[in-house]
Image 1 (cartoon, rainbow, N blue to C red):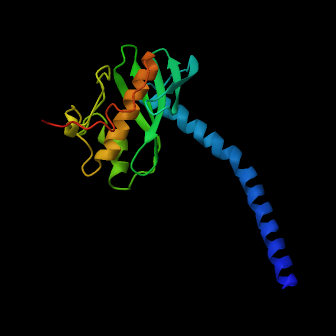
Image 2 (image 1 turned 30 degrees about the vertical axis):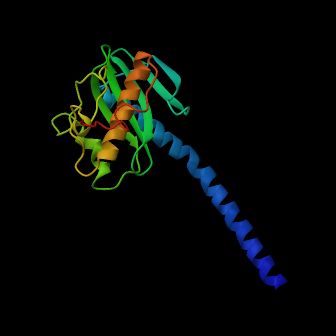
Image 3 (image 1 turned 120 degrees about the horizontal axis):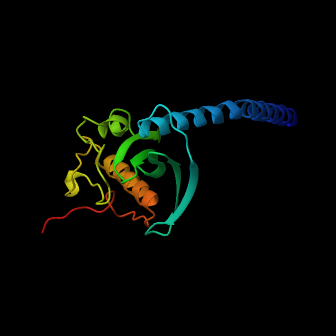
Amino acid sequence: MTNMVCVLTCVAVLMGGVLAWVNHLTSGPIEAQKQLALESGIKAVMQANQLSVASTDTIRNTDAKGKEQVFIVYNNEKGAAVQSSTMGFGGELKVLVGFDQEGNILGYTLLEHQETPGLGAKADQWFQQGQKGNIIGKNPAEPLTVSKDGGQVDAITASTITSRAFLLAVNNAYNAYKGKATDTQTGASKQHKEE
C-alpha cells in the first residue's frame, strides 16, 4: 500500500511539474496571439486598415444588480472601439464594438463566446451589414432590442437569449463610450409584454 501511494504521489508531482512547465512555455505566445487578435479586431470594427490607438481607457460601472462591469475603450481618430461583455446562453459573450464620433456603430466582432455552434454562435455574422439582424450604422442612443421585445433588430432564429445578450453588450458599450451608466435590464432581460 505504501509503495502504491509513493508511486502515485511521484507521478502526480511529476505531471504537475510538466503541466506547469508547458503552461509557462505557452503563456507568452497565447498572450501575443490575443494581442494580435485585438489589434486586428480594432481595425476591423473601425473599418480602417491603418489605425492607431490614441489612448486606452478602463471604465468601471456598477449595474442594477450591483455587479461591477469593466469596459475597455480604445480611442482613435475615427471614434472608439469598446470592449464589452455580458452573459449569453452558454457563458460569457465578449464583444468589441466600433463607434464613430456621433456614436453610430461602424462594426463589431466577437472576441470570445461559448454559445451553441450553429445557433448562438451565428452572432458573429447575424448582426453584420447586409444580414437579417443588421446593426451597422445604427445609433444605440435609443437602446437596441430584439423585435420580439418590441425593438427593431431581428433575433437569431432559435437564439433569442444570445441575441438579447449581444445587444445588451452593444448597448452597454455605447453607454461606456458616451459616459452613461449602464443598465443591465435594457435589451437583454426586459421582456416586452402586451396588455
